[in-house]
Length: 107
Image 1 (cartoon, rainbow, N blue to C red):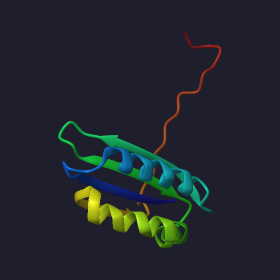
Image 2 (cartoon, helix red, strand yellow; image 1 turned 180 degrees about the horizontal axis):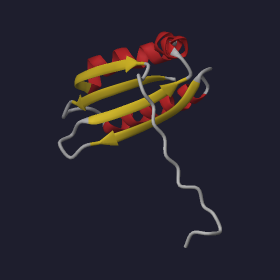
Image 3 (tube, rainbow, N blue to C red; image 1 turned 90 degrees about the vertical axis):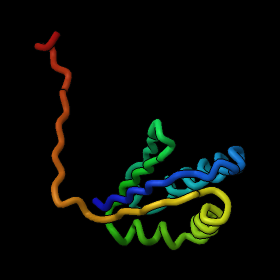
Image 4 (spheres, one colour; image 1 turned 90 degrees about the horizontal axis):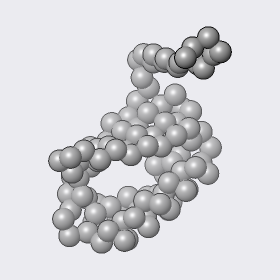
């Protein structure tokens, strides 16, 4: 598993409609990429957004970064949408999971 964390703050003067259309298209395009596992986005009260994507491996994430349509929207993001951003990527050193499974014994 390879994780990409995209922390960002948007400019106050962006076109919300244009940004939303680009974001929706990128999510749909990512779903089609080999090695894509998941995507979630979270917004904090202070305006920061964290987008988290999971990939099968680093090669899959790098292929996504090089996708021509994605690269075009990335450039538009720097030119028109983002005030600042930080991208963190890598393989987790540890993964812990817990899942409460429904059984007939539990209320």
